[in-house]
Image (cartoon, rainbow, N blue to C red):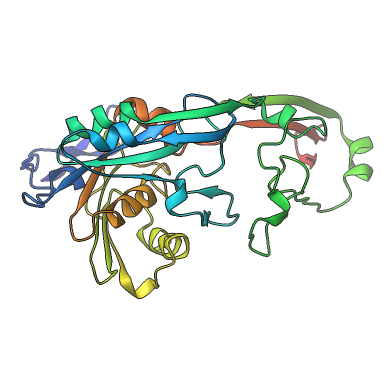
Length: 314
C-alpha cells in the first residue's frame, strides 16, 4: 500500500507501508528442466585477435567418453548478420577477435563438455591485429574483412570495400559554414568511449532442440526473439515457420541480449544431435570476451553558440 506523506520541503511523496513478497517463482532459462535427455555444450574460443584458421583437430575431444558431437565452421558456411552479414556462426576461415567461437562441444555433462573443449586443437596463422577504431579506418590499416565488398547488406547500409569501414554516412542540415562566424563561443574537442560490457546478473543462456523433422525450438534469455528467429532462419537455411524462439524472464540485458550471439551456436550444435536439447551457459569470463558489447567510440565534436548561450551550429 502506498500513502502520501508530507516531505520536509512541502511536497508529497509516496511511502510504502508493505512490500510484495519475493516468491522466487520467476523462471529463467537456467531454471528450466528438460529431463534426462538434456545435453550440455561448451564453446571453444579464439585466444588471438586476428588470424587464419589453418587446421582444427577435434579427434581427442570426440574420443572423450560422454562427448556426443563437435561442431565447427565447416558445418555451416553461411554468413550471419542483422544488417550486414559479416560473420559466421563458428569462425570459418579466420578469427577476428579474442573470444570468437571456433568450435562447439556437446556432451552428457557440463564438466565433460568443458574438458572436451580444452582438447580441441586449433592451428592459427597470426595476422596483424588492430585495436583502435580510429586507426582501423585509415587507408593503411590491416583489413579485418578483406571480402567486405562481397557481403550481403541491406539497402541503407553503405560499407566501403577495401577498408575496415562497414558503414559510412553523412548527415547535413542547414549551413554550418555561415553559422560559425556568428558564434560568440565555439567549443571543440575529441572524446573517446571504451567498449562497455553490459554485465547483466544473468549471463547468456540458451537451450536448443533440433527435431528430426527439422523443426527447431530455442529457449533463450533474449531481448529480441523475433530478430533471433529471422537470423536463425537465414543462417541455418531453415524456413521461419519451422523455428520457434521462447524467451522467458530475462535477468538483465541492457542491449547485450538483443540481436543474436550464442543462440545460433547452440542451435547448430543441437543439429548435430537431433532430437535432444542442448544447453549452453556462459561463464562470467565468457560474457566479457565472447558476447555483445557496446561499441567503442571516437567522437570529434564542435559546438557554437551566441552571446546568450543559444546554439547556432553543431
